[in-house]
Amino acid sequence: MLRFRVRTAAGVITLLLLAGTGVVSGRLSAAPVAAKQTTIRFTVSEKGHNKLPGGQVLMTRASGSGSLTLADTPQAGTEYKSTGATGTIRFHGWRVVGGRVIDDANLSMDVVSGSYRFISRMQRVVLQTTVTQSDPNEKFKCPTGSIGGAGLLDGKVKSQPDSFSTGEFCGLHVLDFGGTVGAKASVVVTIKQGTP
Image (cartoon, rainbow, N blue to C red; front, side):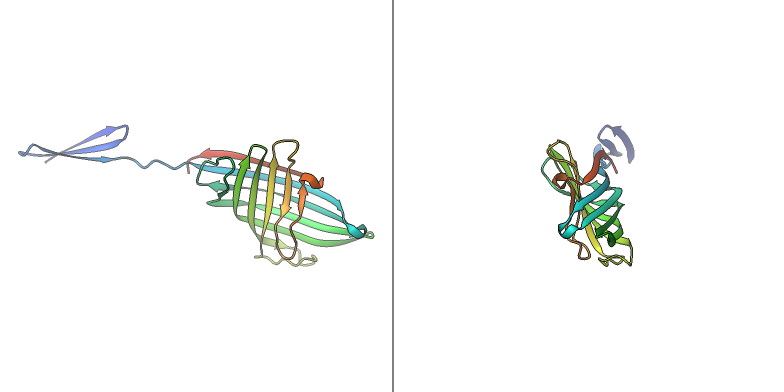
């Protein structure tokens, strides 16, 4: 039996020639094609200063960065769940009441998963997080290990400004900063496509 290997653009063909019989056998083995994945990178910087009823002023600071990995190439209007996620979001919120400062929340959260969606006027990243650091003196007790979330919106037109929103975690209800609220928020989302 004689064995020949022929390399082609589609893979390797192995030919077996059985001596004396004139029988030829062929097998095509193509190398696996690497699937394309998409990396969504995000950064956020927010500084809020909002007046509340009763003469209170809500002050907030948020910052962070990270990435989501998607198995597909995103198409407009479709939401994609991440297959991998990294990053950290830091959030500090406090109120000033009659000259007295009340610390509401001071957290550091690791990004554990998320989703991504875009349309022509904006890109939106929704993150699921786990609290990794928490100030024990804050009003809203949020121990390490607590699950939370954050929403990032990267506006592409003047009528859709950037915004940052907290998710429901530890009794702190959803708060939205930037956008139509008028608090300053800066969100940048970039996309990189490639193979794993």
